Length: 446
Image (cartoon, rainbow, N blue to C red; front, side, top):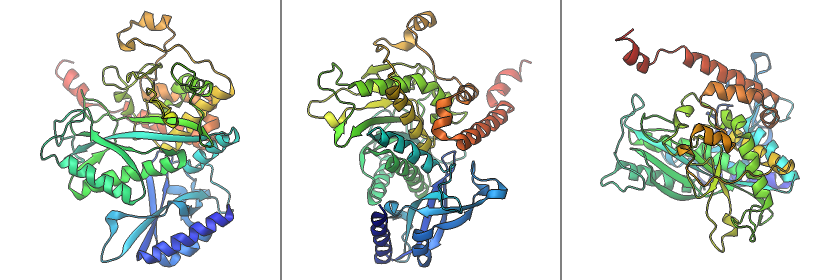
């Protein structure tokens, strides 16, 4: 392992010099999923790769207190790449993701990347590699001041002279230059809403890719005087933006979710994994849907899941099983449809994996598939079928998460407590606001 890192370090130094890199941006993530960065010069690169670079962690959301603020950012050489939009005067800027360490060199327990690594190690002990393929939806608006759309297109529409088509194309080219493979891109259901799907990868690589993706989408938009947003529900009466996450477990080269003899080609492992996700979905919703605005998306009528059900093909259920195609055993997977693209992908992937593994470890039984439209059932019919519901707002999600042993174990005490505290503050601030809706509906009559 040490020799692999040495080889990777040598590769980084060689590529930096060959590409005339003057600055290297060191990237990491706070607990809310915001990308943080500081730059080093090429002269500091070798030392950074060897020992890491010190920084003050006291101002990073969810990180250290003021009296224990010294942190070390240790770059992961495997994440080195040139930033395509930063070439200037023949000089380049590169980036690397970092693992955050304490001054003694041990991993910092509040680093979201470490949280995911720890959970992936748990899967590895069970013989599994966790692969994910998220579909991140987003909106383009004319500015960040108000949600003024660029188009009135709909799902898969190709609109003439559509600025967004060029924005998507440039975004894809930038992502591919950075080594991130893209499978699809298209107009989504809402006006000015779009989707670009990255090719599946192991969960750590994909979490890094998702953070990169969000930045690239925004950078390309900014260069064209447009604002891109991953806000879950920016437009009332239109579909919100989701991060439908496809996932599977592999044992070596074998897809552990595939069974040729099952009617749905799902193995026992896959069924227990789905059962784990369904069982623990309410507990992990705070992580997968962490903002007040997230719950404006999770309402009936806009393709976002509300009820805790699973089905083959059906896109209104919480978990969808894409139909099996002969000869595509490795593509057997499940799709978890509640997360939104404004979550912290390191923590969200950790929670999805932990919930699924809990189902495997404890042998959870998969409930029957729901073949009816759950939205058309009465409340009594849903109760008779044992169909539960996701939290309806951030406060309900906090109360459920706060009691979850699984979530505490998955995130670790430090991240768990910081996240709960942060979200309670957000809810209290939101709850005290006087909204435009209240002014319109109450001011004239009360």
